[in-house]
Each structure stands twice: as C-alpha cells, then as structure tokens.
Image (tube, rainbow, N blue to C red):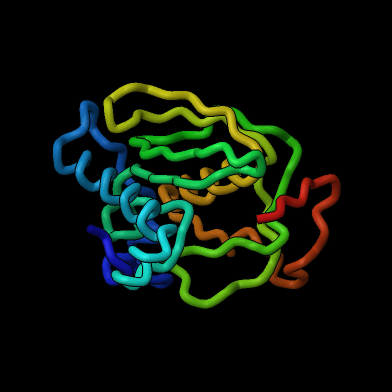
Length: 184
C-alpha cells in the first residue's frame, strides 16, 4: 500500500523527467504499481482509511510521484453530475483537445506539493484520452470539466510538467478570456 512517505516531493528530479513508455503487455510488477496508485487515490478519499494511515486526499496520482518514471496514472473522482471516473491507465495520451480552455476556480493542488500555490491553471476544456487499462484493453475517454482537468494534470506528470508551471507569475489570478471556470 502506498502511503504519504512513498510520494516524492516537489524538487525531486524524477518529477521533472519524461517518463518511459510501459512495455505491452505490462509486467506483473507494472500491474501491481498501477493497481497501488488507484488503491491510494480511492483510500485517500475514505475518511476512516485516510485518518488511520495519514493519507492526504487526492483525486489522481501518477507513477513518477512515487519515484517510478513510467507512464502510468490513476484517477478516481466524480464529475458535477456525480458520475464516477475511476481509471488506472498505462501509457495514457491526449489524442485530441478543444481550443476552448477551462480552469479550476479554487486552483489546483498536488500530492507532491506540500504548500498551496494560488493561481489559475489553464487547461483544455475537453480532451480525448487513450490508454490501456489493467485488463490490457485499450480504452478511449472523452472528458470535460473536472475529469478533463485531472487527466491533464496527471498526464503532465508523465512529461515532467508541474501544475504551477502554467500559473502566470505576474498575475496568478488573471482571467482567462473565454475560459470555463470549474467549481470543485
């Protein structure tokens, strides 16, 4: 089971590396790592389990955040219609995106960043993601709202990009013209 001690913090060199593709079919070790990423995110949202193990709640986690530089992410969240998005993916990639932008009104956070970093993070409002699930099946997801933002955040981790790289240093809360504000 992954704990907060397993999650590397901002400044660690692995967080700035481009992660390696996972060979298909995935090894048992890679399947176990991906499974444990999803398990952490699910457990972190359960108040009893998170209190017992000292887990910080999160909606997504990428393998580089546990110092494994491979292209694996896990996401577990509900959208504004209470639809559940619970996915563990090998080699996820964004295959298309909208020109229209969106951002979280409350700003983004990250399990690898201990302090809050205020500001708007511009993301694509809609994306299509392809990846391979734990069963080895290729899946394609069309996403918008919070799920789209979360997937972009986690896929950025696979490319060595941190959320605060997108925040305008001079004007962190600069309104993004025509962008859709997303409430969390």
